[in-house]
Every structure is written in C-alpha cells, then in structure tokens.
Length: 211
Image (cartoon, rainbow, N blue to C red; front, top):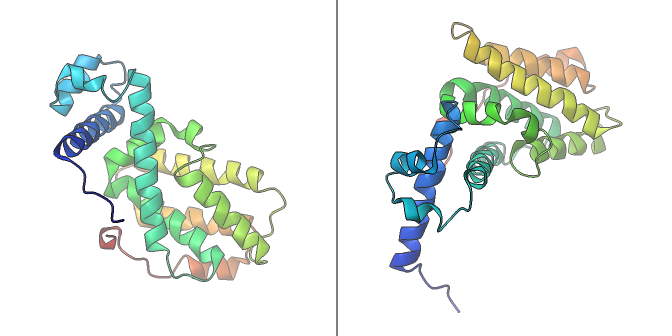
C-alpha cells in the first residue's frame, strides 16, 4: 500500500519543530544557550505551548539541534563523496570539504565547534563517518592504522582546532589551511608524502552543488 501523505496537522507540527531546531542552532552559534524557553519560542516565532509539544527541556532541544546539524553535514559529505572508489580519497575529500564549511556556513560551523568534544564520540554525524572511512582505508591497505579510536582522537582534534583557527583568523585562506591539515593527516595515517599531496591537490565538488 502506498504511504499516506502527511496531514495538515502533521505538516504544521513538522514546521514548528523545524523552526524550534533552527532557532536553537542560531542561539548555539551565538553562544546564547542560557536563554529562557520563552526567548527560544520568540526566536522561532511559535507559541510557548508549542515548545512542550515537541521537547521537555531546553537541553533536549539543543541536543536535537546539534544532531540535526551533524546529520545534515554528514549527509552532504556522503553525497559529495559518492562514486569515489578509494577510501583514502573519501576521507581526504570529506575533511577538506569540512574545513571549507567553517567559512561557507559559519553558523553551522559554530554549532559543531560549540559541542566539539562531545561530537568526537557521537554515534551520528561526522565522527562515525570518519571512523568508517578510516577503517575502510585500513582494510584496503591504504592506511596503516592499528587502532581506529586513537586515530579518531587525532582527526577530531585537528578538525576542531582548524575550525577555531579559521574563525579567529578570518584573513587566513581556509582552502589552503584545510588542504594542508588534510595532507598532514594522510601522512600520519600511512600514505606516502607524495601521494598525500597529490590527493589534496585534486579538484573538489562545490558545497553548493549538493541537492
């Protein structure tokens, strides 16, 4: 049987939840995580009672906002690396694109950086995708990695520190910085220096080309 289209009530509830999540993401990016529920609903342009139809606490909303941001960026990376056969290139391209995200979408970048340490061990978003790519490259003999969890510590630390650096130094070339850090990571993970440089010199799909 074909699935029924969402009812008007379901569509309205989905719009309300999306507005609350987007408002929370903006507040997180601005560092305003101590505001009241009333201020959140005002920012989302929804009624106060609507908040409690979707979330029990502000903390629950903020977690949903971060998970939504993570899943959105992770899905974007999956789309932009689809069709690549080399897992080492998949990892490199994802990291290079994420480095460019900090300038391309500063609000999303700030959401990710605000919860950076928690995200390094998250089961959704970027961390499991990076771990997947590292393990795939190790199985294929492209990376020399004995412990994927320890490799993730270095990768996550590099990603977070790169993002913070790019926010603090707006004059720095974000593409060049992202590519140089990616190249260093590839060498650390076992690729020869010449190959690591070549992979990081390849053209990238634009972040605007994703569906």
